[in-house]
Structure formats: structure tokens, C-alpha cells
Figure: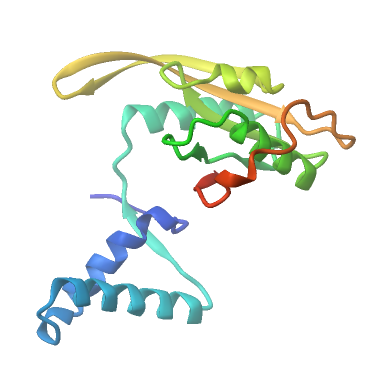
Length: 188
């Protein structure tokens, strides 16, 4: 088993909480599963806020999707030097309001003028959204994933955009404020 040092991601927090609960035997002190989980969260966030460094080691288990994205990004980075990555752009799917994605991208452009950003997607996602927002498709590669004993063809896509210093953002600047208690995220 080969281990790699990697940056800790928020999506890994639940694993860490589980490891702390089990590895530090919190169940010896608490019988209630809800209280145990809450204490595990409390413990983790307390430690995280007091830490000066967080170092993580992960077992390398890269699937074809991640391996392909790394490969096309490495080729892209051999001639380019992007400033950041859009990791995920999501909106509450129960809200049927158009323009949330545009609003999030417009805000990003206001904050990150002059920077080059990239993102990964695939042909099973709404990649056209990014093309209509000025992103250029710079790399792509066909793969075949094995999902539930089924061969699924997929095209991995890498997009980039150089954000202009003077914003020419088109689209929605305001959204119906009655939806503002909903969840919308652009995670970079």
C-alpha cells in the first residue's frame, strides 16, 4: 500500500470524525450515537481551529476518472500557469430559478479579475453552461468506466477561462431574493 501526503479537504472531515470516535474510543464514554457523533464533531473542529498545520496521508486509490483528469491537467499545465480551479458549482436542485450559476460565476469574476481558472467536467454534465459563459475547452479524453458491472463511456473535459480585468459579464446580476435562504455553492 502506497501512501501520499495530500491537502486535507472538507469532504474528508466525516472520515476524520469517524476515525477519532473509533480510534480514540469515545464510545467508552458515550452510549448515545447522536451524542457520540456530536462529540466527535466538536472534538474535530476544536482541534482543527487550534492546529497550526494539518498534514494528511491517504492511501493512493485513483480511479480512471481522477487519473485521466490529472493527466489532461498535467498536459495543460506544461504550457499554462492557472491561478485556481473551480472545484464544484452547485445549486439546490429543488429551486427552479434560472440564473444562480451565472450569478455565482459573475461574483467570482468580480473577485478574481485578471486570473486564469480551470475546471473539470464530463460529457454527462451540463458542460455547455461553461461554454456559454466564455470557458474554452482545452483538453478532452474518452474513457470507459466500470460502474456496477456496466461499461459506461465518458468524455473527461478540461475548461479554462482567463477572467478579464474589466468585467464584461453577461447575464443575471440579481436573483429573486425570496430564494436567498436556499443553498448555492461555488467551491474553489
